[in-house]
Length: 270
Image 1 (cartoon, one colour):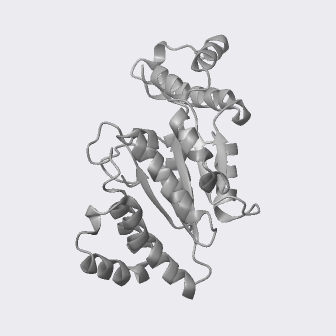
Image 2 (cartoon, helix red, strand yellow; image 1 turned 60 degrees about the vertical axis):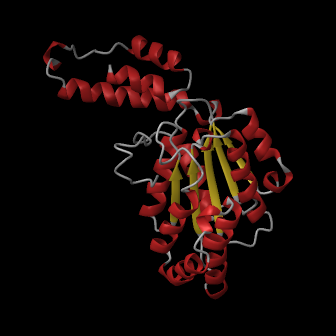
């Protein structure tokens, strides 16, 4: 479930020089370049819009720039990451790697509560994530940590998905933790209801992948770069004319993509 796990072979990420507007907006929010009004961001859009690619890219950008980030990428067809059960343990492991000072606190908590992973998600989160971070923050006010939870809609149960959002909302509604959380998911009705709850809505920033982010321009850039690569590497490249592909054909693919990167990606693979 990590952003760099070997199980996520060649994870989707943003093509170079695409999605720059949304990535810049997210990064400014994460590091506080804009006034902090929200502690939770919800990146939403249709299937194939590029949500996971953006979450992957923002994780990599944050790490490159020294921002501490822990992540969990749900995946519907992988039994090890399509339920809520491993989420807190996975995040706690990453917290220890990012903030070694929390190791003793977390290990002692597990030894004192040997059945902690049989307790509720809220209890696990409080004991293994919130309490250690709160204690560390008391001695280091500059502490900041980003959590990325991608593909909430790929977690097995709709009620569990809503409870996960509700639990994080309750934790952050007082705005006294050095945590920010980026969620990525489809814009399904039950998730909209969960994010509309007052304990979440008051600390929420929404980013909808729609025409405001000029997806067509990014898709065209992606296609042109990929077609150039084909012209350089394909075994039958000598049969391709210098004018291939025709501009009108590229435009047709852009229009048929309807803002969904997955369509253009499948065309290029074909």
